[in-house]
Length: 343
Ligand SMILES: Nc1ncnc2c1ncn2[C@@H]1O[C@H](COP(=O)(O)OP(=O)(O)OP(=O)(O)O)[C@@H](O)[C@H]1O
Ligand SMILES: [Mg+2]
Image 1: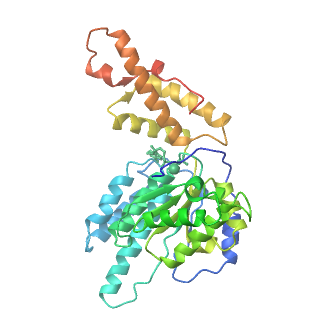
Image 2: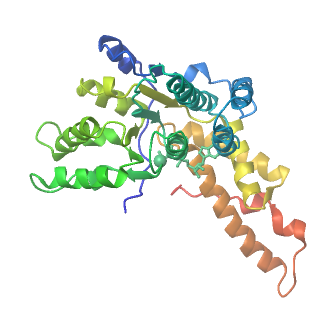
Image 3: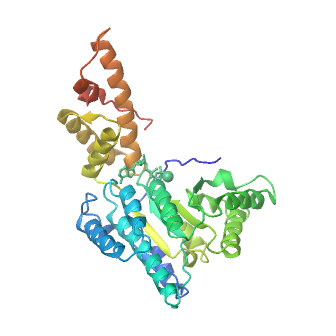
């Protein structure tokens, strides 16, 4: 089962796709949402006003809801995620739309048929896969998708070695994704080889599947901002098929620290203040020096997981034959934080 995702080059967001989209008239029933990173670049935590408003609106909405727990469950999953306020708001919008559509159809009004295929643009480790899983579950809870699972694939999973092979491979994966989300990571790599490349066959097969199986699966194309923009520009038929585009901005150093602390806490560890200080300094440097390949939350997850291993080795050395106290067992000290270029 393909479940891989890779880090790679990344650059800043352009607005060429938005321009391209303006040129392409969309069917009137599609949701037209393009979110830009600068709108939310100041947000640092889930407890921001935008998230708060969404939560209040959700509470108010749930009072009359036939499925009152639906959004609460999704919110519970999203709330601990640091930042991403615009994504949280968009997910609430989708929920609201589906919820109202249900009410409308109950009183005989048109419920509309919407298109939920999406583009996720963001550098490595900015939460794209995590959010895709949440979207899959939301669409399942709201009755759009029958299963709500996520199949994550990349070029090698879709593209074959001879004529016809690619279409078969791609169709098989679409089949597996039925009732859920097909998440294509580094989607632009499908167009890299030009007209003669089998990647083109994969794109054509995906487009055909979107038409043949309307609303039976949701396709999310993900990738680094500039490459995704190029990809959409070189495939002019594509942008209008993906009415929902979401930008995943790089995390700020403050957000990365919050994410580190959250990851440590989830594992029953805590970073001592000196460790936080050391990590902060390192993140400032690392972010600046690997501008195009810094892997955001994935980077800090690796740092924390490595620190947990180093802490274990340190404790065994410090307490040969003895048992460290509870506090010691939990504490990540500055000396447990070591950097590795392979991150
Ligand atoms: N906002 C966040 N708050 C807390 N943890 C986060 C957040 N964003 C990402 N993470 C964590 O960071 C790790 C990487 O996230 P994820 O796989 O969703 O990113 P991605 O954008 O898909 O990365 P890639 O492009 O490398 O596939 C996961 O362990 C995820 O739980
Ligand atoms: Mg991913």
